[in-house]
Length: 372
Image (tube, rainbow, N blue to C red):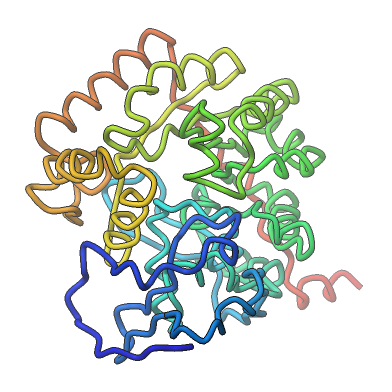
């Protein structure tokens, strides 16, 4: 049954045990609950009232919602990242990474940043046509477009909807540079597009590698490719001439921080040429969702994990200030940064640059007709 409570606008650091969704229903999912978002006037929880009604509820399934966006390219002015524009083919992500900093965006559509983020996926239909229109604008200046900076463009739903494929076809025809971030082997499907673009210096692919432990990966990223598969993806992309970045992100204190050097070393051996990292980010509802998760799976060191996170965020679980939100601050964050830098230098990772001078705007219909 649905139990309605008054909603406290202050984000809770812990969720009540009653808010957990029964384990069989959320099997294969990352989050443990379906807590209401911060904009909702009421907080709803599923609670067992003793009549056994929850036993009849089926396992959570992924639902696709067609979205008709008015624009596709998103601009940003953050000094913390190298790109100023991005595309997200989907809203929400089936991979279910419990740490995903994009989870709170589901609150903007009245859904839970928890399990709804993993099961209620918005598909941006007509994205390719919209992109062609935006690239053909007279005042458009080509710069690298990042895809996958929020949600994975190669998540399982892409197999059916092929939104990422259609976007990549447009970028390929226009000789437009693109940087892709993914943790899916599905990216290999598009090698017929990626390899020719790589020959022109138009594409690089960042593979997110968070752990080499398959059991830990299953807890952190239940529907993403296993670590060994991601290393295989790096090898195959490299063999096809596609430059690869390894993203050891996020680094989570006392969970995967001990793997930094091994992650970089294995990725380098597989062919990665560039490396990056991000310290765990916990904006808005993610603070409560992550705290709930570590209390469930790491109860013996949950307090230590939270304490280390707070040490990197001026005593809080998150600090959104530029210069701090990506790499944190304080002694522990400094130590993580130095370990990453030393390991990267030892392996001779280099920055991968892409070209923008080959860009050819898509022809508008009026221009096409003028040929006849």
